[in-house]
Amino acid sequence: MNNLKEEIKKQVRLELARRDFFEYCKLMASDFYKADRAFLKDVCSQLQDFYESDEKICVINMPPRHGKSRTAGKFVEWILGINPKEKIMTGSYNETLSGTFAKSVRDTIASERTEGVLVYNDIFPNTKIKYGEASSSKWALSGSGQANYLATSPTGTATGFGCTLMIIDDLIKNVQEAYNENVLQKQIDWFINTMLSRTETGFKLIIIMTRWASSDLAGYILENFENVRHINYKAVQKDSSMLCSDILNKEDYDLKTKNMNKDIIYANYQQEPIDVKNRLYSKFKTYEKLPPAHYIMNYTDTADEGDDYLCSIDYQMYGSDYYILDILYTDEAMEITEPAVAEMLTKDRVGFANIESNNGGRGFARNVQRELKLLKNTHTKINWFHQSENKIARILSNSTAVMNNIYFPVNWEDKWTEFAHHIKHYVRDGKNKHDDAEDCLTGVYEHPKPNAISFGYTKPV
Image: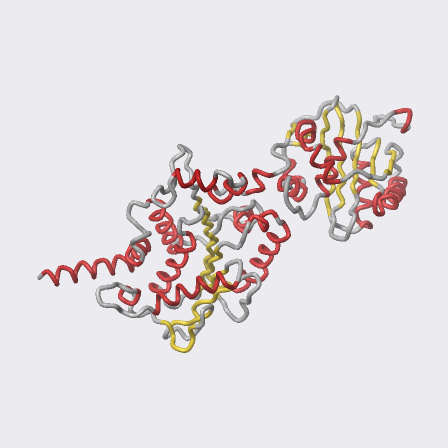
């Protein structure tokens, strides 16, 4: 009788594991997936709900050592148990990590029955690794007729494999990559151009990572896709309690973070991107109605190299404050930007325009003058000058003054989307891909007001 009761209990547990992802995790790794670890139960429940819903994309941000990669692996196991026809692709920052992930899932499915120990095959007896097609990074299930799993990375390949479920797990390796905008952009390009092209009809996408930077892949997804399920866990809660003291208690947290860089603490443990704390500009002033104009001016920073941006800003002054009127921010060729700048100067009735003459700027200024004549603009005086001061030093030293004295129209982020994106994500310490917007904005603030005698400046009517 006791044996029968035990067998019934066992079968109930097995059936629960088939129906419920958290129950599966508890059965397979009871030492970690405990009933009192509420956040683990929540993430498992949300993953299952996401899989069973019509939602397409899920982003999960969690602190280190709290089971994000482990849970992703368990989820792949469970999915292949309930649906052996699923085709899954996972991506990590290098081949070693992605291969380790793949091998762990494969070995769990292939584990043999052991007396007195529950294994994967007890829960999902019909899901088996196909003999002869079980490499560490690509393998198939028996009876599927196709590969079911591929592990890859930005340096790997996804050729010839289509997936219905894609899981991207921790693409950023370290803080150096988080600070490097070029690396982050390459990861996004890899995701868009390589990974998304491998998805099949009805696919689902899961991004699991620490929020190192606001322009990382998770940030890109959250900003550019709609209806994204975002599961976000911080190690330290608002009331100073820990997410899970059983995994990381306050004493250990304080010891680990005592001498750690604050930016890394915020990113690793609180899911607050490094560049949010490290951004050069923390605020931007706005206006709804323009005050009277004492001066109407322009500052233009021409594109120094092929991939640089031209930035030209029309603004008016009232007292010691600067009110932005219009911005041209583009990487178009000079034959496009020269007449565009002239048209903007004419439209805004600009009286005085400063144009940097570095690296071809003088030629640009002369061509703008020519365009102004064609537009019959007699009110704009062009002044080209050589900027000899260090660009980065200028941008950094004037950042507070820029925030305090420059005003943008209330809808400026919609009017000048790319310009806004660049200045909002420029970091004080790190490798910024572009600094043209910041350089020009700094020039607006630091350039002297025109002098009616020395410049022949006449305020436009």
